[in-house]
Length: 70
Image 1: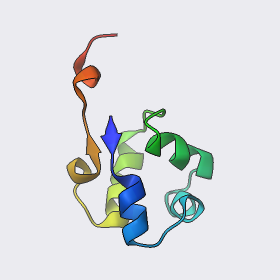
Image 2: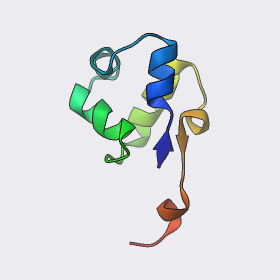
Image 3: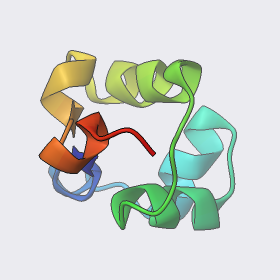
Image 4: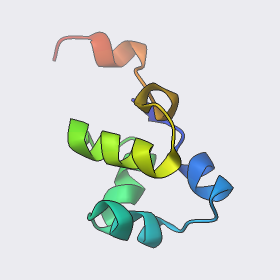
């Protein structure tokens, strides 16, 4: 899943650590999400979207590979 968290953070001048504190996760979790190496929960996705005042689908976008059965 692709995401625009890094771009949205830059718009709000937030560090990974600041965003992590706002949504109650570690900075490493935010880093992993931005890198596409972490499948986050719906609740966490909604929290992040709320912080950025954006619909979830503006922040997170499914890729073709996300539709494949594993």
